[in-house]
Amino acid sequence: MLKFVKNHMDSISGIEIYPIISLLIFFGFFVILFWWVVTAKKEYITKVSDLPFDNKNQTEL
Image (cartoon, rainbow, N blue to C red; front, side):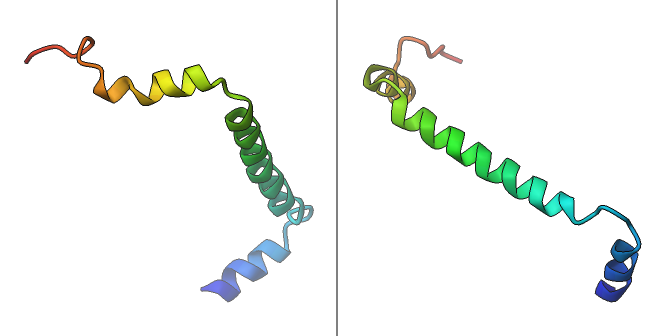
């Protein structure tokens, strides 16, 4: 099965760029996420982390 896929992929011109693009997208996402976490305000993080324990927003079923 893998030989069939590999032989088929070799016949497509320019396919070697797709792994590079996917790696750049993956790396870029985590760099942006890391930057957001580092620069996030402490008050916002505290407010969001306390949301599950906030009983004012919950409704009785």
